[in-house]
Length: 89
Image (cartoon, rainbow, N blue to C red; front, side, top):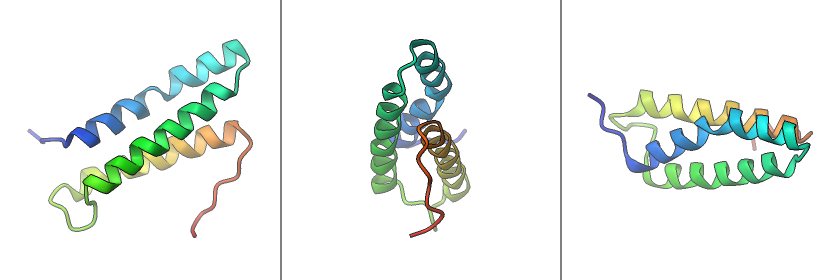
């Protein structure tokens, strides 16, 4: 059994909300729901990244997976808002 850090669990839960938020935004014709979700997702990811080292951690593979999931969902949310995403800084 894999023990997950509370910040990993929080991020996974936030990621799982995306499809429902997108559907709700579509039904209400309210893109601000996606903008708010994207902002909150970024905050939750920042907490995760601050408390859960990725590179070199015993949990490196699972944490790389959650980072990839975050990038995919955040890119989808920003695409829906018409915001281009930088590939690197």
